[in-house]
Length: 297
Image (cartoon, rainbow, N blue to C red; front, side, top):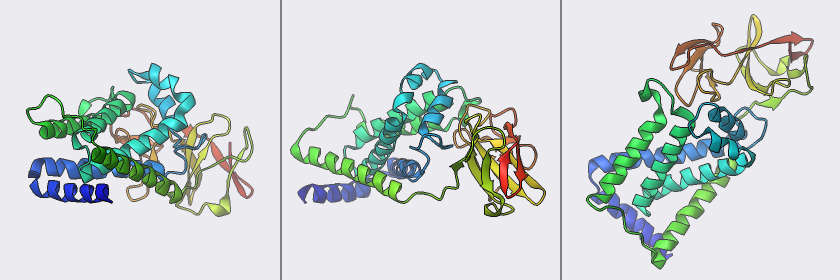
């Protein structure tokens, strides 16, 4: 109870006394990292092998164009554990930042996470300002420098109260991860029911006109997005042609968008590039309607 009271008092005092510039960075970075952790935790495919958004698929795609690709390849066998670690770390950094628990250490952790993501997924992005991870790394570093001021490094405090406060943040991060897993985002992604050409994807009656459906191509093993319009059905690979991230369909703009570097593709114009660093359209995936099913062609 004393540790909880200490966290509450410290958080309120810090918000009251902190200057506007670091306060703005603190709100944005802390809230964004919590949201990032929740987005991964609530994604039912993030820790599920074979799903389009599986962390292992993303790491394998990153490794092909990353200066630390050799490290990413070495951890592919432990991809699920890496995904869990990233989720908990993002929650912990965000919560600690907002609650003012080991603030300098949390900022340094956010900086390390951002640098790692930059080296993994967006190091070769051109022009460089499209690489969002590098911007987060700079913001975390700037926030850290504001916190430590003229000191070389923040002092490490191993007092009982400080350890308890850190443990509480860790417990909150783990609890938030479990909460995200218990409240998954809606997902229409499934595997094809049979292997090879003609594999069934989804029943036509279950895919209304104007809707999309995520699936994994049975022969190629790649994530894909299926569209149904009044004219019929068509599908594209969900792997961005820039650096291999998984694109998602945004119904409000009717575009396929890469979350890593903001490339956009028009699914109703042969998935041509609309904006962003990608230079060629998404690959087509052959599908057709056969009886009551949409199948791979």
